[in-house]
Image (cartoon, rainbow, N blue to C red):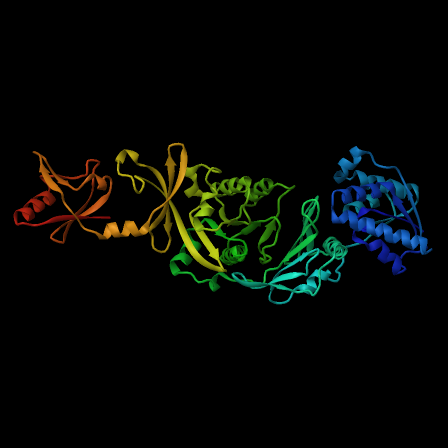
Length: 530
């Protein structure tokens, strides 16, 4: 009987399996020229699927040489234009035409191809996705393995331990050769195409990213890299929010107030693990939670839908999500300017956002928004920054907008909108972000100087009177500041110093009369900055 396999069954290697199991009767395998061209184009782009399909053709040719099957090539060679639009089904149409002309059975693993062929009345064998043995790379994992690193010419390596406490160890006794690593790569791609719980997230010239259950596998090859390399990463633990060490104050903020959260930290610090815990926490509180990921590797419950870039564009994913109306969305791995713009748009649309950002310091996560969105909008987009290191919460910042004279300046004319980045637990300002001339500056507020200055008591320089006013001279270095006034250590009032370095008090007020009476008794006036 004549059989025409399409590209899908050649790529996943199942046509030879059917022959070896004697499931095809007196097989005469007819290979359309269009399929060979498509596989050749894939291989020339460096895609593992192309090499896998060509390897399957080589096996079929060997079977034909051994007399197990008859085999021939036929059909028209597709034009460059048809190859360019192959994703629209043009190559599939040519394959169907060959099956019709040869009066053959079409074998496909493509559901749409099978339905279309059935609509045309063609005899079709549709091979459904099957469960298969795991690829060889999975043998390198044990319960403590975080990631496996395989590169041609060196022994396999693995990170073992937990985030922040791991070591890199050799897990092989000899270097891996290029043929071995290419075989591993083909196994991974073929398994991903067959397994219903696996999928190919990215496939480009020189690189393939596969999500295989909880394991994310990145395959790099020339010309993208200088040699073949496979990196497989697996989360070793699923952590709940209760397992993190955090204050009641932070728990209340996360539950009640925080709606623009940035989770930052260095690579491998446990940011995604914390994002998962946060997503599960909100879901358990009856919130609708979605994720935006590329690749989709967050380990979340079935109630949380994971979205990847729609047609390769995360902006289109955001458009769909706004129609879905989630309460919270986790945006995993924000890197490009477009990612930050999408995060800002969704937050301003009223969606609670949780963004994951790489940074070595907590403030760096906020700085990555500067220049990408309007400065004055940042506090409306991000209200909480959580810095993760070694799998633990190391720092939490609260972001606020105010109008003030920046720290270190004295002239009231220099007042401007300032973004205050405060330590959440202590409530103290650690950084100020504002425009200075044409530039946006991020200025650290030195706590040691600020605290010591507040703790010091400063004497009043002098007193000046007019007909209606009483002026306490304190010095221009205090211009614009709020100060507490004391007389012999007894609190009198809190006031703001004007640009001339004076505290002005109406002489008719009770406070002015009290100050005059205290001075007549020999009292000593002093101030303490607030």
